[in-house]
Length: 445
Image 1 (spheres, rainbow, N blue to C red):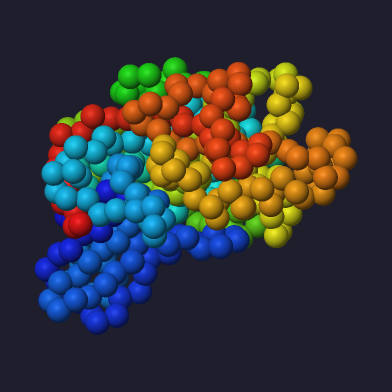
Image 2 (cartoon, one colour):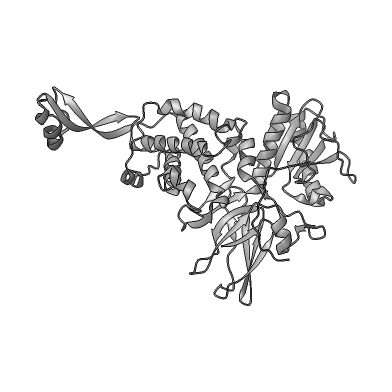
Protein backbone atom coordinates (compact mmCIF):
# COMPACT_ATOMS: atom_id res chain seq x y z
CA UNK A 1 0.00 0.00 0.00
CA UNK A 2 1.44 3.38 -1.06
CA UNK A 3 0.66 6.08 1.53
CA UNK A 4 1.07 9.86 1.43
CA UNK A 5 -0.44 12.89 3.22
CA UNK A 6 -2.80 15.33 1.56
CA UNK A 7 -1.20 18.17 -0.41
CA UNK A 8 2.01 16.24 -1.07
CA UNK A 9 3.65 13.93 -3.59
CA UNK A 10 5.09 10.43 -3.57
CA UNK A 11 7.42 8.87 -6.14
CA UNK A 12 7.27 5.08 -6.56
CA UNK A 13 8.81 2.51 -8.88
CA UNK A 14 6.15 1.62 -11.42
CA UNK A 15 7.75 0.51 -14.72
CA UNK A 16 4.52 -1.00 -16.08
CA UNK A 17 2.61 2.29 -15.79
CA UNK A 18 1.38 3.93 -18.99
CA UNK A 19 2.99 7.16 -20.19
CA UNK A 20 -0.26 9.03 -19.58
CA UNK A 21 -2.48 8.20 -16.60
CA UNK A 22 -5.82 9.92 -16.07
CA UNK A 23 -6.26 11.95 -12.92
CA UNK A 24 -8.81 10.83 -10.33
CA UNK A 25 -11.63 13.36 -9.94
CA UNK A 26 -14.39 13.86 -7.40
CA UNK A 27 -17.69 14.22 -9.26
CA UNK A 28 -19.76 17.21 -8.14
CA UNK A 29 -22.82 19.03 -9.38
CA UNK A 30 -20.89 22.26 -9.95
CA UNK A 31 -17.18 21.77 -10.55
CA UNK A 32 -15.38 18.44 -10.29
CA UNK A 33 -12.52 18.30 -7.79
CA UNK A 34 -9.07 16.83 -8.40
CA UNK A 35 -8.29 14.00 -5.95
CA UNK A 36 -4.96 12.78 -7.32
CA UNK A 37 -2.74 13.36 -10.36
CA UNK A 38 -0.05 11.09 -11.80
CA UNK A 39 3.20 11.88 -13.62
CA UNK A 40 5.38 9.24 -15.31
CA UNK A 41 9.16 9.83 -15.32
CA UNK A 42 11.19 6.95 -16.70
CA UNK A 43 10.25 3.87 -14.68
CA UNK A 44 8.93 5.93 -11.78
CA UNK A 45 5.47 7.31 -11.12
CA UNK A 46 4.74 10.37 -8.98
CA UNK A 47 1.40 10.53 -7.15
CA UNK A 48 0.30 14.07 -6.27
CA UNK A 49 -2.48 14.56 -3.70
CA UNK A 50 -4.69 17.57 -3.04
CA UNK A 51 -7.17 18.37 -0.26
CA UNK A 52 -9.07 15.10 -0.81
CA UNK A 53 -8.23 12.08 1.37
CA UNK A 54 -9.13 8.45 0.84
CA UNK A 55 -8.12 5.20 -0.83
CA UNK A 56 -8.20 4.25 -4.50
CA UNK A 57 -6.46 2.23 -7.21
CA UNK A 58 -3.84 3.77 -9.49
CA UNK A 59 -5.75 3.91 -12.81
CA UNK A 60 -4.67 2.59 -16.18
CA UNK A 61 -2.87 -0.58 -15.11
CA UNK A 62 -3.95 -4.23 -15.17
CA UNK A 63 -1.83 -4.98 -12.10
CA UNK A 64 -3.72 -3.13 -9.40
CA UNK A 65 -1.80 -0.81 -7.08
CA UNK A 66 -3.78 0.76 -4.21
CA UNK A 67 -2.76 3.99 -2.51
CA UNK A 68 -4.01 5.86 0.53
CA UNK A 69 -4.04 9.63 1.10
CA UNK A 70 -3.96 10.37 4.83
CA UNK A 71 -5.73 13.31 6.51
CA UNK A 72 -2.49 14.98 7.57
CA UNK A 73 -2.38 18.71 6.86
CA UNK A 74 0.83 19.94 5.26
CA UNK A 75 1.86 23.18 7.05
CA UNK A 76 4.63 24.13 4.59
CA UNK A 77 3.68 26.60 1.84
CA UNK A 78 5.57 28.09 -1.06
CA UNK A 79 4.41 31.71 -0.92
CA UNK A 80 5.55 32.39 -4.48
CA UNK A 81 3.62 29.59 -6.18
CA UNK A 82 0.85 29.52 -3.58
CA UNK A 83 1.09 25.73 -3.36
CA UNK A 84 2.14 23.47 -0.46
CA UNK A 85 5.79 22.47 -0.38
CA UNK A 86 6.95 18.88 -0.61
CA UNK A 87 7.84 17.04 2.59
CA UNK A 88 10.78 14.84 3.46
CA UNK A 89 10.18 11.43 5.01
CA UNK A 90 11.16 12.81 8.43
CA UNK A 91 8.82 15.80 8.13
CA UNK A 92 5.92 13.63 6.97
CA UNK A 93 6.44 11.24 9.89
CA UNK A 94 6.02 14.14 12.34
CA UNK A 95 2.69 15.29 10.91
CA UNK A 96 -0.30 14.80 13.18
CA UNK A 97 -3.32 13.07 11.76
CA UNK A 98 -6.65 14.90 11.58
CA UNK A 99 -9.56 13.24 13.38
CA UNK A 100 -12.01 13.24 10.47
CA UNK A 101 -14.79 11.51 12.41
CA UNK A 102 -14.64 13.93 15.34
CA UNK A 103 -14.75 16.94 13.02
CA UNK A 104 -17.88 15.59 11.38
CA UNK A 105 -19.55 14.55 14.65
CA UNK A 106 -19.01 17.99 16.15
CA UNK A 107 -20.57 19.60 13.09
CA UNK A 108 -23.51 17.18 13.04
CA UNK A 109 -24.42 17.97 16.64
CA UNK A 110 -26.49 20.76 15.09
CA UNK A 111 -29.72 19.80 13.29
CA UNK A 112 -29.75 20.60 9.61
CA UNK A 113 -26.02 20.34 8.93
CA UNK A 114 -26.41 16.72 7.82
CA UNK A 115 -28.34 18.02 4.79
CA UNK A 116 -25.06 19.44 3.45
CA UNK A 117 -23.11 16.14 3.56
CA UNK A 118 -24.18 14.84 0.13
CA UNK A 119 -21.03 16.09 -1.61
CA UNK A 120 -18.75 15.48 1.35
CA UNK A 121 -17.59 12.07 0.19
CA UNK A 122 -17.74 9.77 -2.82
CA UNK A 123 -17.81 5.96 -2.67
CA UNK A 124 -17.07 3.77 -5.69
CA UNK A 125 -19.29 0.83 -4.82
CA UNK A 126 -18.70 -0.98 -8.11
CA UNK A 127 -14.88 -0.98 -7.92
CA UNK A 128 -12.82 -3.80 -6.35
CA UNK A 129 -12.37 -3.37 -2.60
CA UNK A 130 -9.07 -2.34 -1.02
CA UNK A 131 -7.72 -3.96 2.18
CA UNK A 132 -6.91 -1.19 4.67
CA UNK A 133 -5.53 -1.28 8.23
CA UNK A 134 -8.27 -0.67 10.78
CA UNK A 135 -6.77 2.68 11.80
CA UNK A 136 -7.28 3.87 8.21
CA UNK A 137 -10.99 3.08 8.27
CA UNK A 138 -12.31 6.59 7.67
CA UNK A 139 -15.28 5.29 5.71
CA UNK A 140 -17.36 3.37 8.28
CA UNK A 141 -18.52 6.45 10.26
CA UNK A 142 -19.33 8.25 7.00
CA UNK A 143 -21.33 5.28 5.71
CA UNK A 144 -23.29 5.14 8.95
CA UNK A 145 -23.94 8.89 8.93
CA UNK A 146 -25.14 8.77 5.33
CA UNK A 147 -27.29 5.70 6.03
CA UNK A 148 -28.98 7.35 9.02
CA UNK A 149 -29.51 10.55 7.03
CA UNK A 150 -31.23 8.69 4.17
CA UNK A 151 -33.35 6.59 6.54
CA UNK A 152 -34.43 9.74 8.37
CA UNK A 153 -35.66 11.14 5.06
CA UNK A 154 -37.53 7.87 4.39
CA UNK A 155 -39.23 8.12 7.79
CA UNK A 156 -40.17 11.74 7.12
CA UNK A 157 -41.90 10.73 3.88
CA UNK A 158 -43.42 7.55 5.33
CA UNK A 159 -42.34 3.92 5.11
CA UNK A 160 -42.93 2.08 1.86
CA UNK A 161 -45.70 -0.52 2.00
CA UNK A 162 -45.47 -3.67 -0.10
CA UNK A 163 -46.61 -7.29 -0.40
CA UNK A 164 -44.50 -9.87 1.40
CA UNK A 165 -44.79 -13.58 2.17
CA UNK A 166 -45.60 -14.83 5.66
CA UNK A 167 -45.94 -18.32 7.16
CA UNK A 168 -48.65 -18.59 9.81
CA UNK A 169 -50.17 -21.40 11.83
CA UNK A 170 -53.87 -20.56 11.39
CA UNK A 171 -56.68 -21.87 13.57
CA UNK A 172 -59.91 -23.02 11.97
CA UNK A 173 -59.21 -21.59 8.51
CA UNK A 174 -57.01 -21.91 5.45
CA UNK A 175 -55.38 -19.05 3.55
CA UNK A 176 -53.02 -19.09 0.59
CA UNK A 177 -50.85 -22.19 0.17
CA UNK A 178 -51.08 -25.02 2.71
CA UNK A 179 -47.64 -26.13 3.95
CA UNK A 180 -48.34 -29.83 4.28
CA UNK A 181 -45.04 -30.87 5.85
CA UNK A 182 -45.15 -28.25 8.61
CA UNK A 183 -48.85 -28.87 9.23
CA UNK A 184 -48.24 -32.58 9.79
CA UNK A 185 -45.11 -32.06 11.88
CA UNK A 186 -46.30 -29.17 14.04
CA UNK A 187 -50.05 -29.83 14.27
CA UNK A 188 -51.37 -33.28 13.34
CA UNK A 189 -48.78 -35.27 15.31
CA UNK A 190 -49.60 -33.07 18.30
CA UNK A 191 -53.38 -33.56 17.90
CA UNK A 192 -53.94 -29.96 16.79
CA UNK A 193 -56.39 -30.98 14.11
CA UNK A 194 -57.90 -27.51 13.63
CA UNK A 195 -54.53 -25.79 12.99
CA UNK A 196 -53.06 -25.45 9.49
CA UNK A 197 -49.70 -23.99 8.46
CA UNK A 198 -50.26 -21.63 5.50
CA UNK A 199 -48.11 -19.36 3.34
CA UNK A 200 -49.75 -16.23 1.97
CA UNK A 201 -49.05 -12.59 1.16
CA UNK A 202 -49.71 -9.59 3.37
CA UNK A 203 -49.57 -5.87 2.56
CA UNK A 204 -47.85 -3.53 5.00
CA UNK A 205 -44.59 -2.10 6.37
CA UNK A 206 -42.87 -5.44 6.95
CA UNK A 207 -41.44 -5.80 3.43
CA UNK A 208 -37.92 -6.98 2.73
CA UNK A 209 -36.50 -3.45 2.29
CA UNK A 210 -37.82 -2.24 5.66
CA UNK A 211 -36.64 -5.42 7.40
CA UNK A 212 -33.17 -4.96 5.92
CA UNK A 213 -33.10 -1.34 7.11
CA UNK A 214 -34.28 -2.40 10.58
CA UNK A 215 -31.57 -5.08 10.79
CA UNK A 216 -28.93 -2.54 9.76
CA UNK A 217 -30.20 0.00 12.31
CA UNK A 218 -29.74 -2.54 15.10
CA UNK A 219 -26.30 -3.36 13.71
CA UNK A 220 -25.36 0.34 13.60
CA UNK A 221 -26.40 0.79 17.23
CA UNK A 222 -24.20 -2.10 18.34
CA UNK A 223 -21.32 -0.71 16.25
CA UNK A 224 -21.64 2.73 17.83
CA UNK A 225 -21.60 1.26 21.34
CA UNK A 226 -18.24 -0.40 20.63
CA UNK A 227 -16.60 3.03 20.18
CA UNK A 228 -16.36 5.23 23.23
CA UNK A 229 -18.21 8.50 22.88
CA UNK A 230 -19.89 7.86 19.52
CA UNK A 231 -23.30 6.95 20.92
CA UNK A 232 -23.20 10.09 23.04
CA UNK A 233 -22.98 12.32 19.98
CA UNK A 234 -26.16 14.38 19.59
CA UNK A 235 -26.49 13.54 15.91
CA UNK A 236 -26.76 9.81 16.56
CA UNK A 237 -29.03 10.16 19.58
CA UNK A 238 -31.44 12.56 17.91
CA UNK A 239 -31.52 10.68 14.60
CA UNK A 240 -32.10 7.25 16.16
CA UNK A 241 -34.80 8.67 18.45
CA UNK A 242 -36.55 10.01 15.35
CA UNK A 243 -36.16 6.84 13.26
CA UNK A 244 -36.80 3.99 15.68
CA UNK A 245 -40.51 4.54 16.45
CA UNK A 246 -41.34 4.25 12.73
CA UNK A 247 -39.74 0.79 12.62
CA UNK A 248 -41.33 -0.41 15.86
CA UNK A 249 -43.57 -2.96 14.12
CA UNK A 250 -41.00 -3.99 11.50
CA UNK A 251 -39.17 -7.29 11.94
CA UNK A 252 -35.37 -7.48 11.78
CA UNK A 253 -35.42 -11.07 10.51
CA UNK A 254 -33.64 -11.19 7.15
CA UNK A 255 -31.75 -14.17 5.76
CA UNK A 256 -28.35 -13.69 4.15
CA UNK A 257 -29.57 -14.78 0.72
CA UNK A 258 -32.42 -12.25 0.95
CA UNK A 259 -29.99 -9.40 1.69
CA UNK A 260 -28.11 -10.10 -1.52
CA UNK A 261 -31.27 -10.45 -3.63
CA UNK A 262 -33.10 -7.23 -2.74
CA UNK A 263 -34.20 -5.55 -5.98
CA UNK A 264 -34.09 -1.82 -6.69
CA UNK A 265 -37.05 0.28 -7.80
CA UNK A 266 -36.49 3.44 -9.83
CA UNK A 267 -39.49 5.12 -8.15
CA UNK A 268 -37.93 4.88 -4.67
CA UNK A 269 -34.52 6.59 -4.89
CA UNK A 270 -34.15 7.02 -1.12
CA UNK A 271 -34.89 3.33 -0.60
CA UNK A 272 -32.41 2.37 -3.31
CA UNK A 273 -29.65 4.31 -1.57
CA UNK A 274 -30.63 3.06 1.88
CA UNK A 275 -30.63 -0.57 0.70
CA UNK A 276 -27.27 -0.19 -1.03
CA UNK A 277 -25.77 1.42 2.07
CA UNK A 278 -27.29 -1.28 4.29
CA UNK A 279 -25.83 -4.02 2.10
CA UNK A 280 -22.43 -2.29 2.15
CA UNK A 281 -22.43 -1.81 5.94
CA UNK A 282 -23.43 -5.41 6.67
CA UNK A 283 -21.04 -6.87 4.11
CA UNK A 284 -18.25 -4.60 5.36
CA UNK A 285 -18.32 -6.30 8.75
CA UNK A 286 -19.00 -9.81 7.50
CA UNK A 287 -22.59 -9.60 8.79
CA UNK A 288 -21.10 -9.93 12.29
CA UNK A 289 -20.28 -7.02 14.63
CA UNK A 290 -17.60 -9.11 16.35
CA UNK A 291 -15.63 -9.51 13.12
CA UNK A 292 -14.53 -5.87 12.92
CA UNK A 293 -13.07 -6.02 16.44
CA UNK A 294 -10.79 -8.98 15.66
CA UNK A 295 -9.50 -8.33 12.14
CA UNK A 296 -6.37 -6.16 11.60
CA UNK A 297 -7.59 -5.04 8.16
CA UNK A 298 -10.92 -4.21 6.60
CA UNK A 299 -11.96 -4.37 2.94
CA UNK A 300 -13.32 -1.07 1.74
CA UNK A 301 -14.56 0.23 -1.62
CA UNK A 302 -12.46 3.09 -3.03
CA UNK A 303 -13.59 6.40 -1.57
CA UNK A 304 -12.68 10.07 -1.33
CA UNK A 305 -13.47 12.68 1.34
CA UNK A 306 -13.47 16.40 0.52
CA UNK A 307 -11.52 17.90 3.44
CA UNK A 308 -12.26 21.48 2.38
CA UNK A 309 -15.99 20.70 2.55
CA UNK A 310 -15.53 18.98 5.91
CA UNK A 311 -13.71 22.04 7.22
CA UNK A 312 -16.59 24.23 6.04
CA UNK A 313 -19.08 22.08 7.98
CA UNK A 314 -16.81 22.12 11.02
CA UNK A 315 -16.65 25.93 10.91
CA UNK A 316 -20.44 26.05 10.45
CA UNK A 317 -20.87 23.98 13.61
CA UNK A 318 -18.48 26.22 15.54
CA UNK A 319 -20.34 29.35 14.36
CA UNK A 320 -23.63 27.83 15.51
CA UNK A 321 -22.01 27.01 18.87
CA UNK A 322 -20.94 30.62 19.33
CA UNK A 323 -23.94 32.55 18.04
CA UNK A 324 -26.71 29.97 18.52
CA UNK A 325 -30.14 31.49 17.83
CA UNK A 326 -29.09 35.06 18.59
CA UNK A 327 -27.83 35.70 15.07
CA UNK A 328 -28.77 35.19 11.45
CA UNK A 329 -26.34 32.75 9.90
CA UNK A 330 -26.59 31.72 6.25
CA UNK A 331 -24.53 28.91 4.71
CA UNK A 332 -23.85 28.56 0.97
CA UNK A 333 -25.50 31.88 0.20
CA UNK A 334 -25.59 33.08 -3.39
CA UNK A 335 -26.57 32.01 -6.88
CA UNK A 336 -25.18 29.90 -9.70
CA UNK A 337 -22.30 32.25 -10.36
CA UNK A 338 -21.42 33.13 -6.75
CA UNK A 339 -21.47 30.71 -3.86
CA UNK A 340 -20.06 32.14 -0.64
CA UNK A 341 -19.60 30.17 2.58
CA UNK A 342 -21.24 32.18 5.39
CA UNK A 343 -23.11 35.39 6.07
CA UNK A 344 -23.28 36.41 9.74
CA UNK A 345 -25.55 39.09 11.18
CA UNK A 346 -25.20 38.98 14.96
CA UNK A 347 -25.99 42.59 15.77
CA UNK A 348 -22.38 43.40 16.63
CA UNK A 349 -21.09 41.72 13.45
CA UNK A 350 -22.22 41.99 9.85
CA UNK A 351 -19.68 39.86 8.05
CA UNK A 352 -18.90 37.71 5.06
CA UNK A 353 -17.02 34.65 6.35
CA UNK A 354 -15.04 32.32 4.12
CA UNK A 355 -13.52 29.00 5.23
CA UNK A 356 -10.18 28.25 3.57
CA UNK A 357 -8.63 24.84 4.17
CA UNK A 358 -5.13 26.31 3.83
CA UNK A 359 -2.41 26.71 6.46
CA UNK A 360 -0.75 29.59 4.59
CA UNK A 361 -2.85 32.14 6.51
CA UNK A 362 -0.90 31.40 9.69
CA UNK A 363 1.75 33.94 8.61
CA UNK A 364 0.69 35.03 5.13
CA UNK A 365 -2.33 35.38 2.81
CA UNK A 366 -3.30 34.78 -0.79
CA UNK A 367 -4.29 37.83 -2.84
CA UNK A 368 -6.69 35.82 -5.03
CA UNK A 369 -8.60 34.71 -1.91
CA UNK A 370 -8.85 38.30 -0.67
CA UNK A 371 -10.23 39.41 -4.03
CA UNK A 372 -12.74 36.57 -4.05
CA UNK A 373 -14.10 37.34 -0.57
CA UNK A 374 -14.13 41.08 -1.30
CA UNK A 375 -16.14 40.37 -4.43
CA UNK A 376 -18.71 38.45 -2.39
CA UNK A 377 -19.05 41.44 -0.04
CA UNK A 378 -19.98 43.64 -3.01
CA UNK A 379 -22.90 41.52 -4.19
CA UNK A 380 -26.24 43.35 -4.15
CA UNK A 381 -27.87 40.26 -2.62
CA UNK A 382 -25.43 40.43 0.29
CA UNK A 383 -26.20 44.10 0.97
CA UNK A 384 -29.89 43.27 0.82
CA UNK A 385 -29.40 40.44 3.34
CA UNK A 386 -27.75 42.86 5.78
CA UNK A 387 -30.20 45.65 4.91
CA UNK A 388 -27.30 47.96 4.07
CA UNK A 389 -27.04 50.74 1.51
CA UNK A 390 -25.10 49.94 -1.65
CA UNK A 391 -21.51 51.03 -1.26
CA UNK A 392 -21.28 50.21 2.45
CA UNK A 393 -18.03 48.37 3.22
CA UNK A 394 -18.82 44.95 4.69
CA UNK A 395 -16.20 43.30 6.89
CA UNK A 396 -14.80 39.94 5.76
CA UNK A 397 -13.20 37.12 7.75
CA UNK A 398 -11.16 34.20 6.43
CA UNK A 399 -11.20 31.17 8.76
CA UNK A 400 -8.32 28.73 8.31
CA UNK A 401 -6.94 25.69 10.18
CA UNK A 402 -4.16 26.43 12.68
CA UNK A 403 -3.16 23.22 14.44
CA UNK A 404 -0.69 24.78 16.89
CA UNK A 405 -1.98 28.24 17.85
CA UNK A 406 -5.56 28.38 16.63
CA UNK A 407 -8.67 29.10 18.68
CA UNK A 408 -10.50 26.14 20.22
CA UNK A 409 -13.83 27.86 19.53
CA UNK A 410 -15.08 30.86 17.57
CA UNK A 411 -14.41 33.98 19.70
CA UNK A 412 -17.02 36.66 20.31
CA UNK A 413 -14.92 39.24 18.46
CA UNK A 414 -14.08 38.16 14.92
CA UNK A 415 -12.11 41.28 14.04
CA UNK A 416 -9.12 40.79 16.36
CA UNK A 417 -6.63 39.79 13.64
CA UNK A 418 -6.68 42.22 10.70
CA UNK A 419 -4.95 41.50 7.40
CA UNK A 420 -2.95 44.72 7.46
CA UNK A 421 -2.83 45.43 3.73
CA UNK A 422 -6.64 45.72 3.48
CA UNK A 423 -9.50 47.58 5.13
CA UNK A 424 -12.15 45.45 6.84
CA UNK A 425 -10.36 42.17 6.14
CA UNK A 426 -9.63 39.79 9.02
CA UNK A 427 -8.42 36.24 9.59
CA UNK A 428 -9.12 33.62 12.26
CA UNK A 429 -7.11 30.47 12.94
CA UNK A 430 -9.16 27.55 14.24
CA UNK A 431 -7.82 24.36 15.79
CA UNK A 432 -9.06 21.06 14.40
CA UNK A 433 -9.23 17.67 16.18
CA UNK A 434 -6.10 15.54 15.83
CA UNK A 435 -5.06 11.92 16.32
CA UNK A 436 -1.50 11.12 17.37
CA UNK A 437 -0.09 8.79 14.70
CA UNK A 438 3.12 6.81 14.98
CA UNK A 439 3.24 5.55 11.40
CA UNK A 440 5.79 7.08 9.05
CA UNK A 441 4.65 8.36 5.69
CA UNK A 442 6.95 8.59 2.68
CA UNK A 443 6.90 11.78 0.63
CA UNK A 444 9.03 13.50 -1.92
CA UNK A 445 10.47 17.00 -1.70
